[in-house]
Image (cartoon, rainbow, N blue to C red; front, side, top):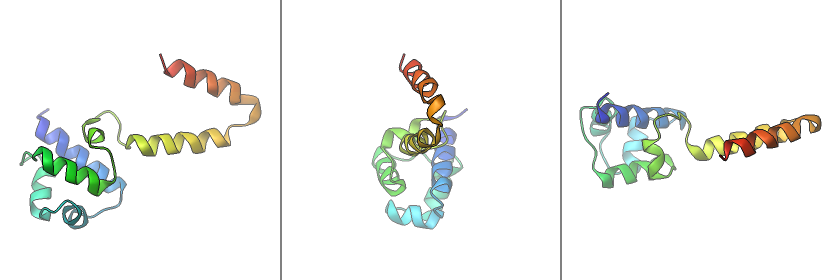
Length: 105
C-alpha cells in the first residue's frame, strides 16, 4: 500500500480514537481541515514539521504515527495494560508476570 495512504489512515484512526474532528486537529496543528482531509485520504504528503504538529495535536509521540500495527497509541496501550493488571485476581498474577517477562525477549 502507498505510504501516503498508510500515514493518512493512521492519522485518521488516531484522530478518531481521540474523538477529535478534522477541524479541531487541524486547528491544533496549525493547518486547514481541507488539507488534513487530503492527508487522511492519501492525496497529500505531509511535511515532517506538520507530522510533528499533528502528533502534538493528538498528544502522542511522533513515532507513534508510524506504528501501523497498533491502532491505539503506545501510551494508551500501557495505561490499558496497567488497568487490566490491577484487575487480575491474586491467584493469576504470577502467570501475568510470566507473560510480561516473556514479551521482553
